[in-house]
Length: 325
Image 1 (cartoon, rainbow, N blue to C red):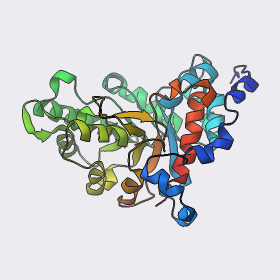
Image 2: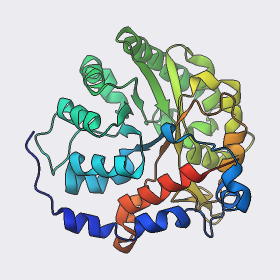
Image 3: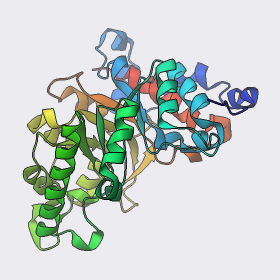
């Protein structure tokens, strides 16, 4: 594979100071229960809630770095930070315009990283299912799925979600035939009530109408708490407690409480928000068996003096490692 020429000194200088600060920035002044507890003197004696070998990243969080620097440099840096599992949001980069999935897989292997899965559009599965599964096999993924809402905004009805569940079952059946598991990643709208039945929560309908052996779930914890804000009446962790084997993956995304905003929260680096991650992880059945993937949609907006999105990734990785309970 032809390596893109990178001014590595310029890149690493953007991260200068963040490595040394990562161990403390994740805890000092943090407002989550997990971060506050980890800072206590007795924290070193408390068990890690996210085992280091179960920490990963959704590459959407560092999409700007991948576009500018390419997969080679970014994956090297993520491995250095301590990420183990990589979830993809696409397989291309302007910095490496000719890179192939096979070459990306080699970069994963070279850096001791595990490709855990990838987000693709529902239309990609409708129109190119076998091609998507081919790529997933090449990348060595155990999981492949979507972060799209199951239906269009105008179709958030009982029948709309039942039809979407049938389609998801067909996707899962095709994936299983190739030795893969198909999954859905939620946002907040899935937790709304059906437009034609205010007593039916759409996410509950999706769970009940999909085959648990064909359709798995990736709980985006932040968006579940936003869902709780806009449509109260549930605790996000209760879904995992009731269906633990359907939730192999989490998006561990933090948020600062903002009652002045429609969503009720604003995304932040992990450890700087108000979501009670210590309580969430302590309540889990089969604790330690889930893969927790850091995601922060607005990480590319991190100022350059904070190391940009990669600086946010490094500090968040350290905070995830430090979460104890």
